[in-house]
Length: 208
Image (tube, rainbow, N blue to C red; front, top):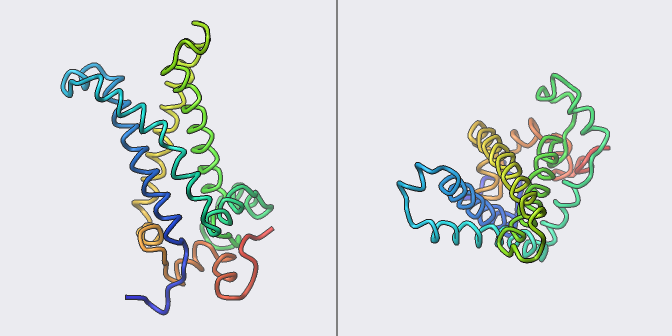
């Protein structure tokens, strides 16, 4: 049932992209942990199956991101995520960033940086994964470097995912926004005041 005090935050296409990407990412992380840890590998067995699942889920990671571009709302939000404003810099430097004194657009500076890191890490893992899966493409020294980069980017991305999930667990209203596409006006105004002003007709969506 629609609540009149709610506002739209994410369209269906954006929510589907997030869900499919999240499932693929979790599968990649779990299979990577199994492949990297000998004890886990012994317990699970079927190394070739686990490796195949890991590889093809990894190759599939960019697919939902690319398909999402068919949605205008998705493209608009990508534009917001890719634009860092003066308000974002103030938000990062402030120790009281959560008190509402700095008007925040649809995404705060932390969310923007997280999206950049996830996108960059995904690209690095995809590129190095291709070199590891088709080793004859490059010479041995490059393959050794690709293994090193792949392992460390995988660890970094795993930590990013853990941090993202931790923040999500602490914010049920944010999770509701990604699950249903709608959030309460009170949450929108408390967490993303500039965006709340925009969706209610009071101002711009991303402050400068």
